[in-house]
Image (cartoon, rainbow, N blue to C red):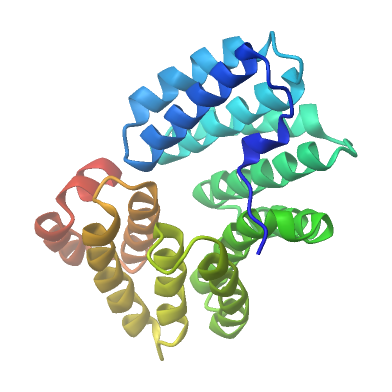
Length: 262
């Protein structure tokens, strides 16, 4: 199955573009190991570089989307919203395939901001829009499509729509396994969502989430953004149920994330 990096959309091969790509790749690497301060610094430097590139529109807004992702991971939701909305506004109406794909990625992260703000309906609409764009673009967008399907499935899980979630996550897992392999963190996350969908009631769902996060810590590292995101969703549900003693117990098992997320 065809797979590409988002930054492959930049065709220029001049030294400035190569340097920008290298810096953005370093920022992405820092993000994936939870070095968010370093990632933020690299992205701001890449943003300044991007303004002078031949394909500046794509490069600038890729940096804005990256900063949005970092701010989501660090709980700075207002700043995340600003970065992502800047990108969405700049890319709106573009017919260029690369910019349309970037729009879909921005919408996916923007949906996460809406979820954090309690607007699940708005989040679902943005994820559906992103899914539609990526389906139109075809197989080159298999990975971002899989991420979008996973996010939509996760949203359905929180709404108790396990049947709908299960249908989506099947498709996401197939794409992720073909493109990234079954040991990739995003496949592991999708597999966790699938296991949740097979649970019979809310208590089983929460127990599966807790056990799944614990397993993921050893597979992808405690600082990985997927761990933080799963913990935010999990703690929010426990808080909704008023299970303060259960949350306190988590300090021994998920100490870093409980401290960070409250």
